[in-house]
Length: 167
Image (cartoon, rainbow, N blue to C red; front, top):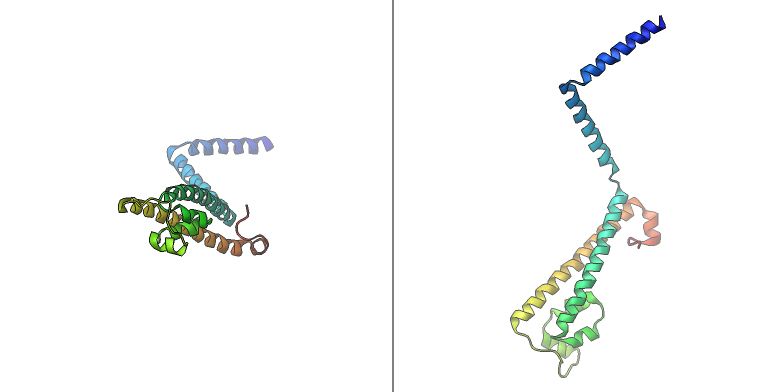
């Protein structure tokens, strides 16, 4: 009797497999499987991944800002080299470099600058480059603010001890 039941069960499985091999069922299985996989992938995106991505983006911005700031310092050094000597911080230097050269010379107590007087088109090009670097500084500040917010929400104890930029 057991063989008869098992044989019947085996026959049912064979018939079910034949049905599942049909094109309609196969497409339904594939579509449902895709939905399930997409759902599982969406669950894998957790707040810690957002924290990691934010930190990595800030580090990338730091490297980029540093590289471009050095380039700008060298370029601006032909115009007013004394400013670069007086101000070490890149962000402050770049923001101040957008000010009028004569006012900076007075403020820094420089009798005669070693820098060359450029045509306005050259000054405009330098200023445009400086403004782009400033935008990167501002973007970095915005990202740091966002990182602090999600760190306070997701791991307040770690944030209180270590801060937002753990490198």
